[in-house]
Length: 170
Image (cartoon, rainbow, N blue to C red; front, side, top):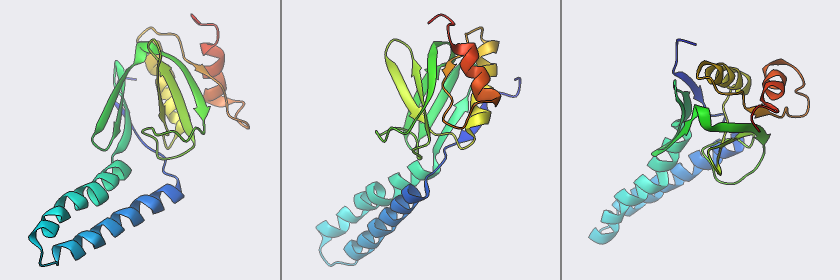
């Protein structure tokens, strides 16, 4: 896997894309209306509202990515960053948990690592992500993480990763 780092974009659920884009457009419309007012205080508020209401959500929408580096998984979600050491990944499981996370789809992977840490991500091509993660873990000498296939996924990289991860130091 010498061509690391591997880059993965987040899968985006259509309803979430619609909510983010509509919210950003509404924030921009409000900002334009505020900027047109004769009151200086209201005009000053226009810029922070534009940044918080339009720029930040669009940054999250366009900037949620996952990179498999030689020693870590780097997760980016707009201005937010997480680094998950590859050797510390203990379990990878599918989930549809709606809790806040750097995942723009409910079709997620929960990655447990370290003592008690977890992060949920939603790579667009889950099969490729899991295959590359498995290869990377083998390169760094770590056991393959556990993988529980989602219903309908009983073969391929997921099933192999699941079999390899079970019982490996757990």
